[in-house]
Image (cartoon, rainbow, N blue to C red; front, side):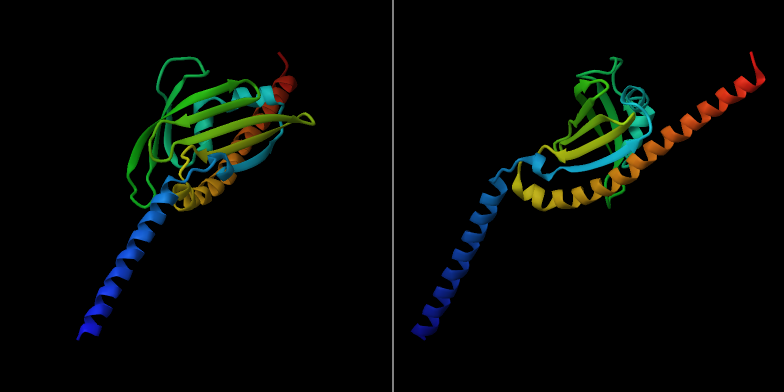
Length: 201
């Protein structure tokens, strides 16, 4: 009887010790910080235009919106000209829930025609988007990098892993879509110019 009772106490003690160790481990991992840039997703897209020309095309709100296919809308939230401190209002559907959330994006870096960066003001993902425009043989290499500014290791190895997969697929499709819109527009311009030359003044 005493042996059985002692075994039960030992088992309960071992269980409690295990719970405490696991809880402490989760606490430590949650507070472990990492460099968020090491978890960035990057995509490169070649554009048949020089950076200055493409930059002026790209920063139009209705074109910039195309880079974020998860957003149902992207609108200017203030009347400022494009530059550091300008705000955009974005609406996006929450995965699985299907609900629409509103977030604000602020331009944090602006160096035309080479660099543009935006950061979301939400407390959940705290997204940063860096957009670079490189000149390469009379063409532009559009380089887009997205990552969460959160420094929690637990976030990046759990929720962040799924988000990176989504961002990677979205970037590939959206960058290709933006390039396609620009290409189609350039073809239309060339067509109208040739028509005008044929018809004369």
